[in-house]
Picture 1 (tube, rainbow, N blue to C red):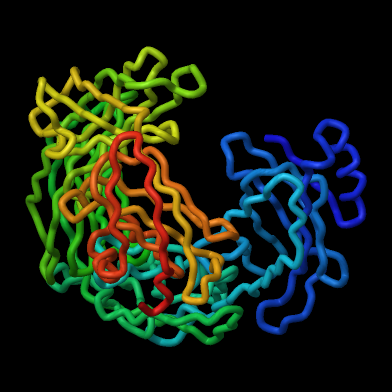
Picture 2: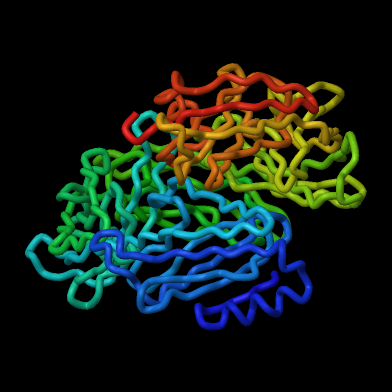
Length: 536
């Protein structure tokens, strides 16, 4: 990566050095000011970066002065990501309104002099509180998690976003928070979960994960709305004792030579509630609270793996005699062929992956690089039904065909429940279609921070390889390349949840506001879009 870091004082000197290798008449400049998003006051010592959005990475840097002003000079024409950094403030992308929202690509034409670029920096939000037990005493060494919820229409599980640990006084602090909605939870260390009663006839009691505002039931957790730059104090979490049980069982299908681990994963998983244990042929997990879980056993020995997952419902009684049979993983190999000419003239660095047909199934990831000869071998694949996914495709390419045993499986998926597949035939075409478009608001102006989604028609929503997303530039322009032939919808979103990309349930919430477009091989389509504003 070529890096150029310049300050307001030194950027003119850097411009002079750059002019020796590039025609002065083609160089660009960008200037503007950084302000506090809430108070409007200018901010000094803000680090700003222009990072190339093209394949050849290139960076320029600048720092604001006491008046909040910055200047980039001697910048080569091109497309750039533009963002700011300052201690105590959240990273801000040009045109972006927050985490997950669109960020504008800055497109600089030859000799363009861009002025009056404003960066409004949002201070970090903070949550503080204490973790206490049923008597109000502090509990140290407890994992505190803030998790963004999935939209109600979406599938899958929420993902922990921010973490902290309670100190010796039970106090915790979660910093660098984006404005948004979160679940707040506290999960005790495993040694705290179990406090046995002396009588074996009485179930043990243990500390369960606590969810705000005061429940151990994840379905009863209430999300917290955190404003930008807010300081929420006194967000205490009380750990509550509840009956816990023991589960015992055995695992078959193990070679006994590699490290073995059994995990109990809660559902829904909106906190760090997973319990991990090593095992021999038999296992015992204690201190388990009633609820829904996935019980996962795996063994890793060198390059091979054995794995099994079994859903389990746990009530108020101990569970004995669970029997799991691990299944050895398999290999999937094949050859990838490219139709058309690769612009670089050399084999692209494509990676092949497998995605479960049932999206809710959480399986170990399996992927492999395609060699220059086109051959690939994916190891440690759990027998299941999959669809093929490709990464790092050339920009004009799309996945055209996946054949197994002479049968086309692009739409139906690969059935690997019966064992390995050593003869996949994958075809990538360089003749993908293209869509060039522009987004204007009701006043005919190009809004900043717009994310544009390309979504296949409803009959092909299961094809993850057909989805694309991009950001508009400061003129509202966008381009999609490497599009497989077919019908699509375009959506220009002012606010966008990146966790729900490729989620048909989420997309249905704004389905009627999309723009239809049909694409053929090598076709070049155009589109004019109006943004779907926040709240719609």
